[in-house]
Image (cartoon, helix red, strand yellow):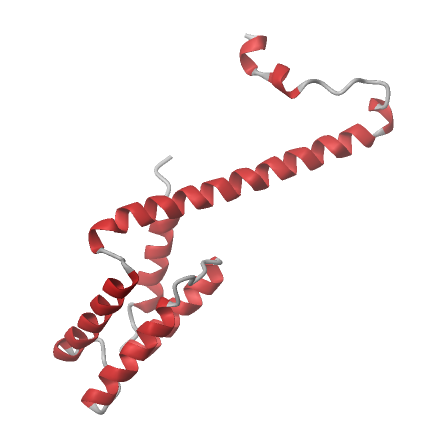
Length: 147
């Protein structure tokens, strides 16, 4: 169907919502807002570590860190690399993390679909016109049986 995956949607949201953000602090706060709105959790506490790294860099350069300041952004990137190393996150593993996110989202969607289908079946079972009908065995509802 050529639709965006969830990680591609998140990436697009980040790009569109942060393209005009001039400073690193607002950028990180925007990322936090996007993460919360998407329902993603920061189980590792990386967000707080990133803000601490930003504070350290801003203290070092004695001014707010602007995204177009290449030298200072290199300092922040180096701090982020230290954080990633401490957390055990490697750049080459990012596709694996993306795949895990997609799998987690797909499982949640399937569980929601299963719950909705079960509720619909229970509602139908309670209707008066279906009182005398036996509930079909779920395993017998394979489409191949009807072909």
